Amino acid sequence: MDFTLNEDQRAIQDMARGFTADRITPYAHQWDEDKVWPADVARAAGELGFGSIYVSEEGGGCGLSRVESVLIFEQLSMGCSSTAAMISIHNMATWMIDRFGNDEQRERLVGDLATLDKMASYCLTEPGAGSDAAGLKTKAVKDGDSYVLNGAKAFISGGGTSDIYVVMARTSDDGARGISCFVVEKGTPGLSFGAQEKKLGWHSQPTCAVMFDDCRVPATNLVGEEGQGFKIAMMGLDGGRLNIGACSLGGAQRALDEAVAYTRERKQFGKAISDFQAIQFKLADMATELEAARLLLYSAADKVSKGVPGAAAAAAMAKRLATDTGFDVTNAALQLHGGYGYLQDYPIERILRDLRVHQILEGTNEIMRVVIARDLLKD
Image (tube, rainbow, N blue to C red; front, side):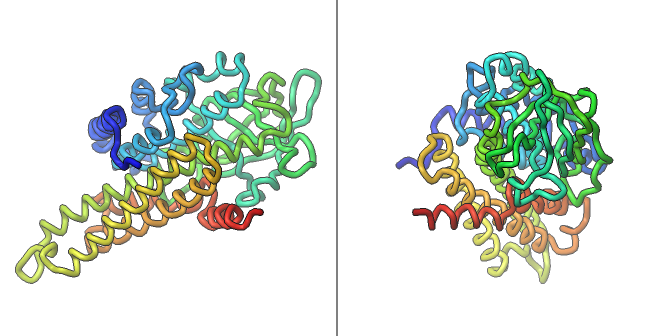
């Protein structure tokens, strides 16, 4: 059992750290304030392979493991967890096409997605189907050599901006087994988008409803087989949960680093507040909790990569702990900043706003407990 990163992993981590310092951290505040998606920075990330981290080499990706993926997203999110999370979702959707699509789909779609010349969105959630994802209502009806889609998806990251939408739609009434996976390309007649949502955080990425009104897609855009969509969606989420956990840890690590620096500089009662034992204990607990969550996340990433039994439950554990810990540590960092932490002059409040949603998306943390308990209680 070795808890150290190998030479290649350290090099990948360093590359992501350097990219974040140069291309993300200096601009994240402005992206948040202006509510703009930094498409040029995403394409630059694609040049480094960050758009297809665990997509197969045969499909045009990097072919790395989920461990390297969480290392990358942890570093990217130290600059801007909102931007990092959008690239994470893109990776998840692209992997689904590569893993379950056929050769023609990989040839036609994955290349431009791998380089982030095109963006992909993941479309599962609906207005009436959140945690009960298998209850989705969007329908896909076979009509000759096409499928006609009708319905709507909610809270879609990249909505209106992405080029490719990986959509779960119902092809039969057979519960989860009646769901299939489709690729819908931007510009397809019948595909439309709602107004951009006004959100607490994640301001650097667009989010809106995605709607299908007699949206006709070729049968060649069916990913996998009919009825396989829910399985594809859940397997995609295993990786997505790891990545969003990494985004929480990276954001929280940045918040902790800022808190350490601030408490060294801030003076009250004649000395730096970092000299007070109460502050030291708080910082020690924050660092300890982050490291514990990080180790669980890396372990879960290794299990998902290897496909070992219990990997899905391990991903759920890691996502639950990392996102809860990430938010709690960031909230503690804001408290250590006092009133200054509440101001936009410091990055803490932005990190706090961005990390809060991580406890909700990719499966709420309550659903993570359901996944874990189901694994514990299975026969």
